[in-house]
Image 1 (cartoon, rainbow, N blue to C red):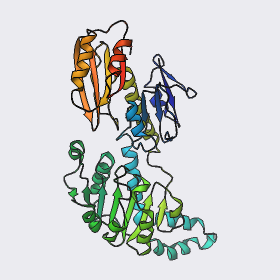
Image 2: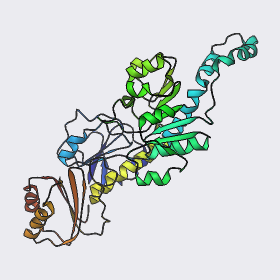
Image 3: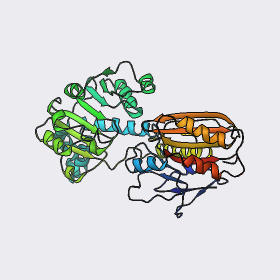
Image 4: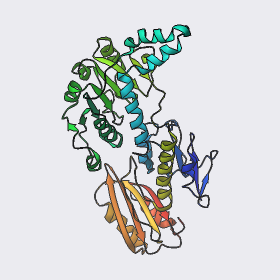
Length: 392
């Protein structure tokens, strides 16, 4: 029986993927085998020795100490693409309200108290809420992952010209991206040509403040900027200066910061990107399945710190080993298996950066595996060993 500790409100659709014959969902336990969460911050948490895996029902994992998990041999799973449609629809909403002053107009109407003169007041005031159409304008999409591709293709359907920038474009994304999307080689080129720019890249040390003072200096005058990826991708001080000098006409972000409050050219939404019942169910299901498959069978898919490694379950016992990605590890592991008279039916070894992960399917295992595990841990670069028998 594996104990799963959920944080935040996780859709019941996720728990349905964790049968109670094998998994115990327990919010009070101090010794979980798996953690299922959304935005709860784990950075100050001391992980128990029992912890084997963490799954986030969402794409971003900034709330999880990835380096610590990797060193402990704990895979961290996310759910890329599960909330993509929800975010796409919100971005399209923002795209339209960044041009058409719908929010301001609607709020103004609610302030009218002279109901007898309402129609006359509306006709007199509507010109102050005028804004341009998006058809024929150019949208720059920074990051062409699952969400960026959906946004780019939808913008084409709305009659926009679309420029995309992604130096790490995957083959899968390229398959789904319309051929009508023009490619930009640099961010500077994209910003200089775009009437609207939308950000869809992850936040890390390299991407923090991607939208900087220098980048905004080459931006097309009067551009509109949308940020539904992560707040720190934008240097807010530089942004406010660009709004003041009218380089940026409007900024809409799903990540409010106090310094952005009260500016009439900034619209802040309360992190609504994945706040749809469909998205929450999709994310919960995907996260739960990833955690289930790892705990039961050692299979890894959609991990941010471990390589994908999947071996279909055949009923035979298996050993999983994570270790530093260095030479001669296969030989060292093989020597241990030989010592313990283990016949290997199948062995898959995949790596990701400085980490490697193995699934070893065995014809059988010794009745007592404690000395086997001890010998595997005696290899200095080994981080985590798991023995998975026929019952999982």
